[in-house]
Image (tube, rainbow, N blue to C red; front, side, top):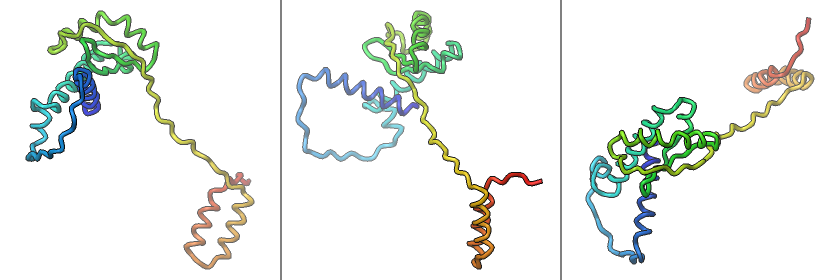
Length: 181
């Protein structure tokens, strides 16, 4: 979840950076060789990845703080999407949940201002993004008629190979047999 937020924050950062640039610089052909650096230095440093990870942590902090102060049935439908131009993006998985979030906006803004780093939040962008759970493939149940099972059993009795006989007997045992008195 934290990595997804980091990637999302990085995408927003890149788009903002591209929008500010008036022209695109040509790519350099030079290959710069850097020494390998520890991951902690890359993710916690002052470069793009460091700011990206800080933004992801802040977004995660905002989401957990807001969810902790919302009613339980509403909290599970709230996701924080990002921060841009002084507005925090809140995502709900349905229009009804988004409507309830609209009514909670003033209180949510007060809750956010309690957290360090969120004093600059002036409002919210509210969006609906339905979450569709993955559908499990339909299980096809096949039935083995009693007559077919009897034929398979008679074939098993006539078979000399013990492994094949056991396999045929297992197959015949799957037939739906009516209880005989």
